[in-house]
Image 1 (cartoon, rainbow, N blue to C red):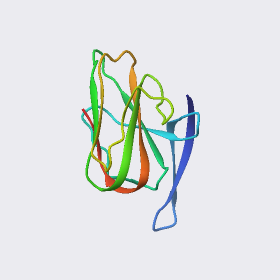
Image 2: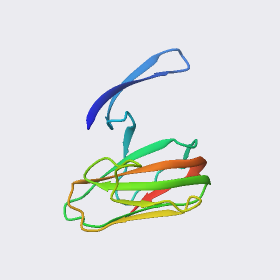
Image 3: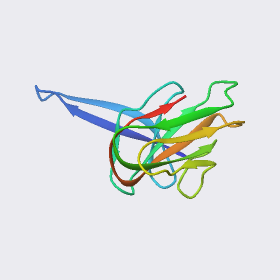
Image 4: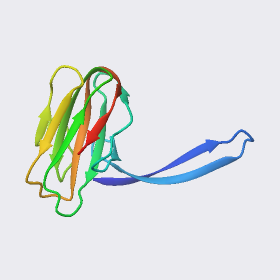
Length: 133
């Protein structure tokens, strides 16, 4: 796992520019990994068929189980998750590939300090929230 730094530039109405640096993890295949904590829900996610949106869930001390749920929106996604390492469609510990956007993956007996999961577009999708609990 690499850490990359991105510079974000925003131009205000008065043409003054702001520069901010943000650290983000990047998986070996170049997909940026977003962070989401237990108890949080992502904004509605959108993408095309074949798109991958990757997440890292840092685990509080003593947390040994976790569920990740997707629901709502349009299209068709799948979820793939892994304990302690980035997940992919080829490398995962748990997955859900039902038709539509109502998917659930569950982890028990967690040993790592983080869980990773991906939202994978089976077709175009829009407005799909993901909840970590």
